[in-house]
Length: 457
Ligand code: HEM
Image 1: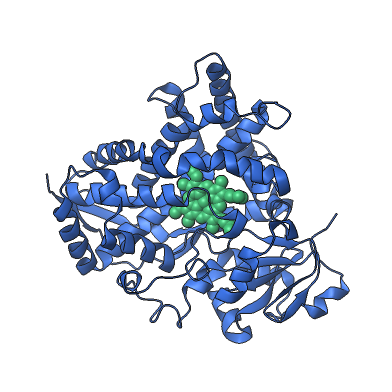
Image 2: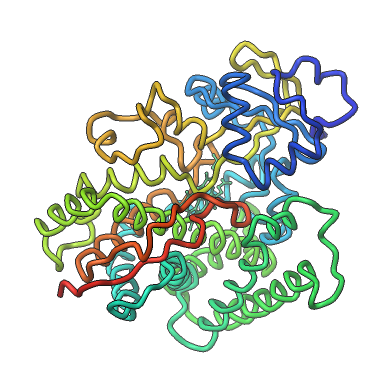
């Protein structure tokens, strides 16, 4: 079995150069100042460098050719699930797609991918618009609110309805409430350390951070298991839980309750926090640069408020605004780590089994040669140029490509369009908004305070 490359190991000498700072300092920087620290390392060491986090060494890559080599390599060359287990297992469980490798990973992806694409995904269009409208209707003219809370509410409702097929009711409300509380436990940079540092994961009672996390997780589990039990008594529906319950493996065996729970948690977590954050950033940028908002409104006015969601999702400027948002403020800074199971050459380095590769989404999106004036929000760049799957990588790539990439963009477009067509918004203050750690993702500081100034219809 391959294990993570860690001290003491003679192969270190062959890794690309990287910051010489002690491991504990690099770990702290990785949690609290990942953007600044990785930018500085890239400037000093180039497009491939070694970064130390906890007791492991990560080879960070932000060169499109290097990333292409990783994304197009034989998936059997990597253990990804194992390399990411420590960060994801506490929330998602050991049967989560994120933690699987090899045949089991491929099989689960095949099962989970279709509902998030094509015709099946489009059936959720009206639902997304309806949920967005209900939230927008609650915004009071002149009363500031936190946009990220609003987008989280929308994306959580969407995923609970689409994945679980849950109708409004007690269980849906309880799940929404408890999941939100569970995510809050690790929402600040300091509290996010809980997810990264196993030594902090101690249950010292209900008031200790980890104790609280475990108790909330138990409550979420109870709700999920209750739903699974109820659903076993009912006719299967159109939702993703029904689909998973009717799936059989090659021996004809269905998924167990624990497997179902882990996959549901994965979809809930991966599917709503990320989209909520991306949407909050989109609202921020559109209103930070009012000319972007005006151009977008002109495009939306062209199709009208009752347009078919599929037509809305095809609008080119709306698409460009979403892409530019995901480029400039990627919700996750890195793709999942890929641990080598066999020797692999990338960018002139011959890397050995156990080495962990980490394509950097953030650094790739900040390349001056691909994105001139990378710190500026310019949706037009996506109208003027087509970027390859190794240059624009907000959803990662290869056999780990985010299964929800089409769904997330569809949801972003429909929520933005619905809100922009219903109300006029502005930022509630001019305070700078910067990316800060929120669990495993990066989110706008303060959540983006906004205010509705007028209703449009
Ligand atoms: C803006 C929203 C989203 C962003 C930025 C995002 C980003 C990512 C990234 C970067 C990865 C890792 C890919 C890699 O390592 O190559 C990933 C994986 C994944 N995402 Fe997303 N995601 C989003 C929304 C969603 C949604 C809506 C769902 C499903 C409902 C979802 C489900 C998953 C799953 C299950 C994986 C693991 C795939 C695997 O291991 O094979 N994500 N996502």
